[in-house]
Length: 119
Image 1 (cartoon, rainbow, N blue to C red):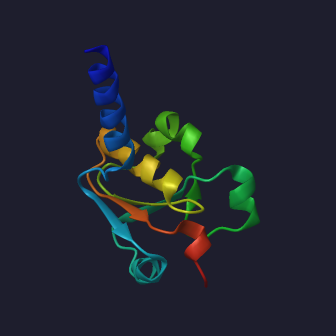
Image 2 (image 1 turned 120 degrees about the vertical axis):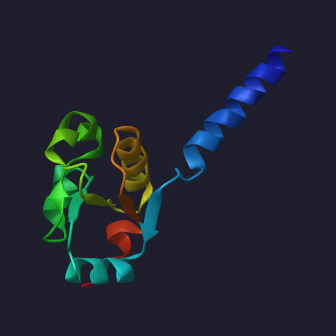
Image 3 (image 1 turned 135 degrees about the vertical axis):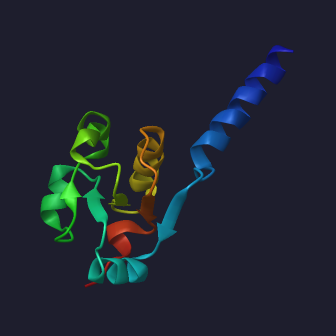
């Protein structure tokens, strides 16, 4: 019985970690270029570390590192779509899930992150 509980917990953990959260839109770098040409009612955040951000970033993106997102979410409007990027797409995926839990309705994750961005 105990092994079954442990197995259930492991399956639940993996499911929560890797299954995309509902309501998070995904775009690639090419689609991001179109979004940046028509910003509309959007806000852009880069969840990489400040050093990564300083090394290379997209002009319209504000740096809010993933580990600060919870305490700095007040800097973002829940009335606007949030477009999130990181280096590869993993941290931005986690940030997108966190934003959904904080009540942000429109969240978009950039798949491939800065690694796939070419100006």
